[in-house]
Image (cartoon, rainbow, N blue to C red):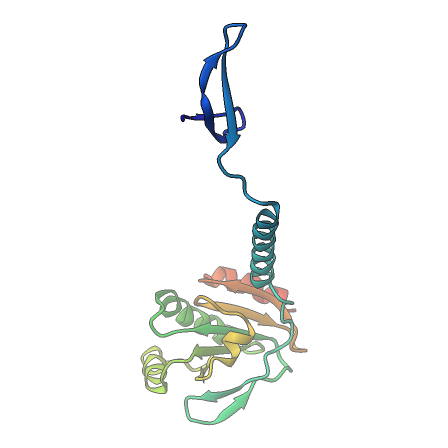
Length: 196
């Protein structure tokens, strides 16, 4: 008994040996070693298709949130606050350990001083109040309001997965733009021009 591979790359087992036929060519008496039953093939195809559909549904973005998140935040003095429309708003979700946030927030504070008609809200994403207060005091923020979001409601509502995350709302509370990642003061000024 011997093994050979046919032109379809299926291994075949020879039966009775290899011999020469009358025309001098080598001839094999063969049978397929194994074939996957069609029911098993269909089951495997079904599993692969179901897996791909599940992956596509899991990875597909859900509808984008376009209104101001309804969340009760806490100011550093302990007062609960809800974000309200009425004035244009720049909302930045950040963390104290984020080096880009450490650079961007003081730059945003400087722009906030020159644009009092725009609210600036720095929403910390779930860190302890002591860390947030320490960062606030070190920076000396006076125009931008720093909030603590201990339950991460805003970050979840806006699907924040990196810091800083910047969101721009018009006076009616509708999202008009967003930038994920660091923004320079020049980029911020260009975004503020779009809020008019």
